[in-house]
Image (cartoon, rainbow, N blue to C red; front, side, top):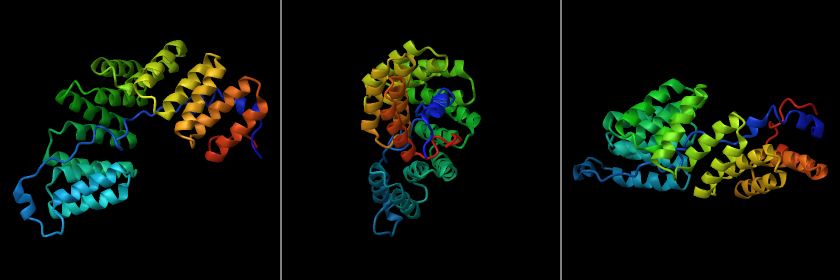
Length: 297
């Protein structure tokens, strides 16, 4: 038996930001931060008696990684490391693949090894920081982002990730400054627009947040969670029909987003479309039975 409308709507405000699908950390998985392997000296290949050279195993790992076959990527990178243990790209790639499998501790260890081989590789410091963020080690992540910024202050994604982590630490003013810095460096960094918009939602500046989400979607219209956030903002502005259109776009991009279905149900309810709203709530629960945890049946 599903929760009734009154129960769910009564909890709507309480769970608003749970339903706000804000992808805070720049995803390492398939991210532009991932670096491709560089050429190695020819003597590297002479050290390996494997069927494939270390370089070929790294290319194999990259191929698997790009196709989101992360377990196979890990195996390939390990093969490369077995052939030549001091191959930076193999350790770096291994860290990325382990991160995408949710093995954050092992990812950090792989990044540490990579950085011991090349401590001047900015993206690896950032990716290690993202892994530490996922582990809840926010202060340590900030230190790594600051190190990366000292090396390259013009990398917008580093400022964005710093802003994300500052939010987790409750340092909202500094987070806003970090997002603004990212936008200043690269106005095409759509995630930074989302970050700033998220901060405005927290302070209930919905009109301004809507403008920023609009800019972000204009840059990259293929993020389902971005449309979801825009829908929430439109709903808060009581533009329910437009909110539903935004949630429909989010669902079109990611049909398995329980939050988008839930938020669409809220807007349908606000329009008085109760039966359709209940069907949509039920769809959200079907996708994520824990979405309404604690709601009386």
